[in-house]
Image 1 (tube, rainbow, N blue to C red):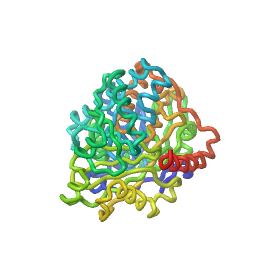
Image 2 (cartoon, rainbow, N blue to C red):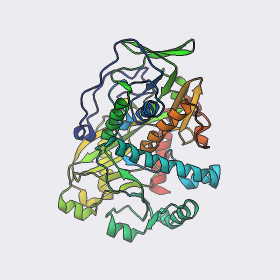
Image 3 (cartoon, one colour):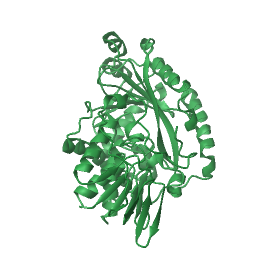
Length: 444
């Protein structure tokens, strides 16, 4: 599997991974590779949520000529591999942690921006008439230990009091009676405005919207390198060159080592894996209590996240291998299936039908960045595995930044990604964190 910390280039024209989403999505004909030199106002590298949202805004709102260059297929990276959780937030810091770091007033602006991100996804779905299996709203943050469950009422009250956010505390008994019979659940907070989608279908919908607005989207067109030429940039692909005035990097966890080293050094690509089970029988749904489509994530350091899909399968995800070369080893789907059955012993006989992995980009300080990295070069990255909604809004904000429009006053828009100390040893730090996380989740 492609590994951004090992491989110098990302390859060209690979098919979608063998995911559940790929079997459920009408991927359509490829847009094809760029084969002739051309010029454009702006080149966007990466046809995921960020790049396609940005390109759509630049073309439809600002009337710019935009070319999107994608190494493989539309949504081939994390945009087509994630769990489809449209959450109000990004990075790894909750509102309480943001308040401790930045103060309440700034955190209230974060909360507003995160709400705008969810609203932007809904608006794009409506404007593009995107068929992406939108599920009813609701997200459950579940305490996996009784000691953590005891803190949930205060957390819910803090969100209501400080942000006017109408979360609901659910006791263990309420959670068991109304939502699921998880033997490792000790209460939850329910967030009312989050929802699930088919993420690959969403990315394809964004691509269609961008192309209808005049954006040229080229697949199987990896950027080999780029350089400045006077006041312009020349972007090189295997078969053509594109001259442009501005360059936007929307590659996030899939940034190749040599594409833009400061961006690569500012992210730790972390593999997240997902399994999808066979469809649950009516009896299994009744026994497990999973008769709803709420998004669910627990409080572990190495989190599990899951939801019921429209065809009654269970999607269940968590951390995976550290190195790309190990991503397809059987131990990782087996570990996730075992975790699912530990939470729901009544599903002991359920079978796994799909398994795949993807890279998420973790930043050094647990927050993403959107910035002008240098003159007329922009990027957004570091979503920390919680980027579906925010990456869509990040595309809007990147377009605004490129057009000289001031962004909301937030720290994530006012600085670049911090490079990891001793970047060559990032994976060793990740291994150490995983060992600590396993100890913390079990004993602390």
